[in-house]
Image 1: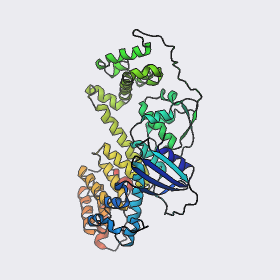
Image 2: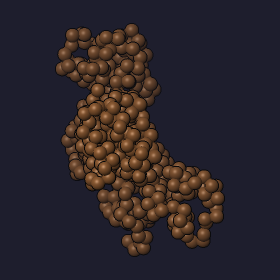
Image 3: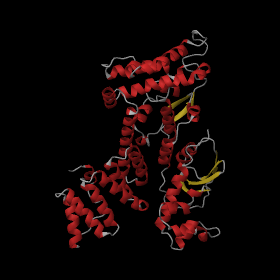
Image 4: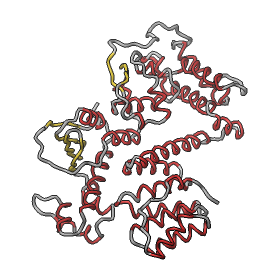
Length: 479
């Protein structure tokens, strides 16, 4: 399998130096590494070139962008030319190069059919300041945002995963950690799959993430076979096995059944009853337990049955979802909406952790994903704006996100405080003062807002830096 995550895993964990060449159709990209660190990229994709990136980040004007050809000089990087002519600053160029490296890499994660070649070179003369790109983070985010692909199962099937290093386990969600806990080093991937409740696509993608983050390694099991041996099952009427006949019969009655009936339990069933029932059903209907030659003809029916019982379990095994299902009769989309809430909260907490670790570029990605899932949470926009204020290229967006947080919770003084500190840091004293005044209007007892106004009015006290306020106070809602 040719996939960028496999190459990044090898280069990063083995601290390799050299040039990776990526070619797919008419796309050609070069990635340069020093001891496992990505230091430079070259790409023929127009929107990924540094001039386009600078314009997207609003570091060059529309006029400068329109006349970009005038800055082309032989054997010189256009970014360096723009800097030497005073069009952009050193910080502008650094931010643009970081953005370019990240996006150029992430954009190729969805594809498994590219030609990828790594040319080892220890004598690189390329020098760069310490890279802001975290390869494990690129791997984690790239795999998460790509769609499930059959190539993943083909790559992982029949192998035995075993635990390796734990360095990047903190990047995993609760559901992924539950899968990792099932890895014993003795069972094949298919055997591990039968012990979990997650959908197969999620399992294969999660296992691939574990492998590429070096949390697990893989070893082949010679002639590994699943328990159900081909040709040994009894045949039912019509020449199909009894297992396939059972699937088709169950599928015909699914439309008339609620979630309890699908799992063959009563509405008074306990959590333990739900889990036991699901495991029993999974053993009967999991796609991997059927003879492969025969099941290929009935793949859609098998997948439909297994997806139905898995969805029933995911709802009934969760108190909040089960309560909503019982109260509403299980309206379409209810479980998906609850899933989105949970996923958004996980992304938010991951972003908050990264913010505390001062890993701002990574925190932005997690928080933007949380907001994509839930756009009604002021806390999400507030923390995102705080993080963006730490990154020079995101200051304008930080202002917009602070304003969104204020719009969602106009009674909360912390949105005004954050925006006030942003303006203060930019030297916009009048605007800053107005925001601190609004914070006091929302909460007349807000001591920090009062101190800031006193500082600005007297002009003698030492000014506080951006985000000198207590981080935790941003998440205490005051009415």
